[in-house]
Image (tube, rainbow, N blue to C red; front, side, top):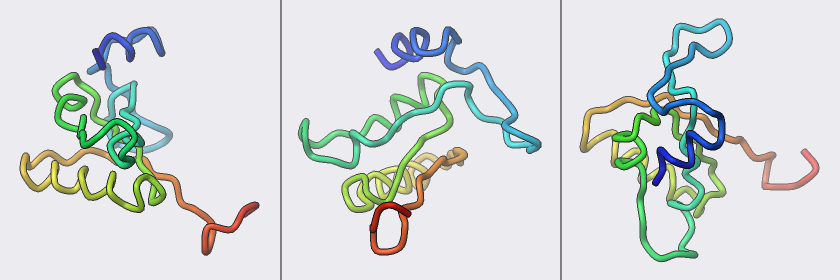
Length: 100
């Protein structure tokens, strides 16, 4: 299911790689939004392994996703599998006060 949505989202096949900016970091053209893994709206779940197996090697997370739960799940995935994805993250302003 993840790979179907990824294809529709950007007309690319998951696993297609990109070199973002002027880096030598090789990442999938489609990222994996880990928001749902960090919040309990749909019960306990972690799609990190499924996303990786589908060719999505760029998880996106933020400290506010379940107060760090999403990041913990990505960290556990890395420890258990030995995979080292490039992680995109959002940094909140000091004390979560908006506007930044």
